[in-house]
Length: 124
Image (tube, rainbow, N blue to C red):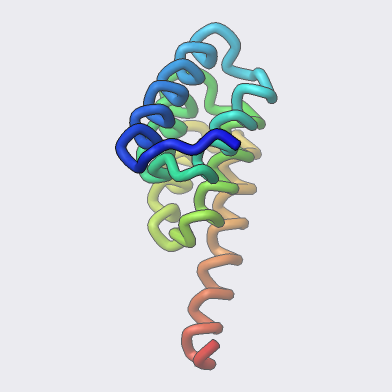
């Protein structure tokens, strides 16, 4: 088994994520690249950094990229940060009102925000 110290582990994740980000510049719709990003985040890479990077892809490169949207959904579930995503969904809808991915993301975000609020009210 491959074991790294905490500092070496963070350094490894950072370098690997940089490499994966370079791969995305070449193939932004590559499923495997997005899956590798997910894997690295599960290992401990900062998901907040990934939200920023994913936003950059969706805003600057391809606002209808299915893999980027799916990864963003996964990130918000992973970090349990649905409420904060309402502004992002609204921003993307304003940018392109015909973007079905942005509308779907808004629905997903609202549904999860409501569920979290209800769970908090009931004490779960």
